[in-house]
Image (tube, rainbow, N blue to C red):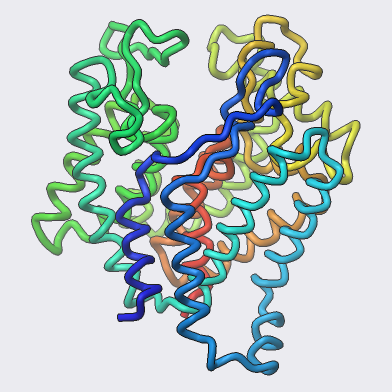
Length: 403
């Protein structure tokens, strides 16, 4: 087996980890508040992807030719991807705060090159079953961890250096609390920065595990523990999206309706402003972020405020003072791309995603995963902002086009 492929499987195994080296800069603060998204960070997965790319180039150094380069550049997914990357780079050049924008662009470029590696080097029928098997071990661990975290109502290791688990407890300021069986409980975080991210990750991967549940005890145990972990995230959106994915595995009528469902959900998500007056705190916050993003788009439609810069200017567009100290990207990946990188990046991003959906139709599991990501992406941002789910996103895109 080539070294690059061994490293690829190692990346899949380490995908849930949250270990990285953070570099806090002056530009990481907004009006005295340290914003996570503006902190340049190098994660273990980033290093593995660099090794994968380097090993792949070394393995193919003798096979390069002009004809192969032309064939490569003639692929529509590569053209759309390159145009998207170029348009994002233009937004970096015009960004309101270049350092965090440029560093985030370097990570995006790295993940795009990983996407190209998947497209050009992997065979779907060979690698995807192995991906599911490797993921299953990770889901077992995450399920155990979720149970322990929920029972303790806090982190288990209580040390970021142990697998990247985020230290938290009931006394942690602004820790997430959700109503569960009549009581307010802290959801399980797993190795992720928020329970919703953990839930979104499991919602996608558990459908993969469910598809293999008849193939052995590993998948049965993985699914049971993973499902318990999903429940303990208390993430309603993740529950719904997992159920949709699971039903799509067995009912063709649901499967063929998924593209229309994505369109309906996307349109609905753009009208969250109508719910801003509701007592639901989460919906109200999302609506206000959406309103702020629309204000940014109106003022800077061509290139946005700069990739990874939306949190820098968000407080200038929020209409409610009590939200000023809670700065996050708009909770919609499509609107986020538009507000940060402009209309061209938005169009190329949507086109690449749409083309991926079309190409993944014969690969039912990948198609279902992309639909799940699109739906979750209409109400949250982690598939384009958080490294674990961002890699999962580019992996799914790549699996749509590989051999």
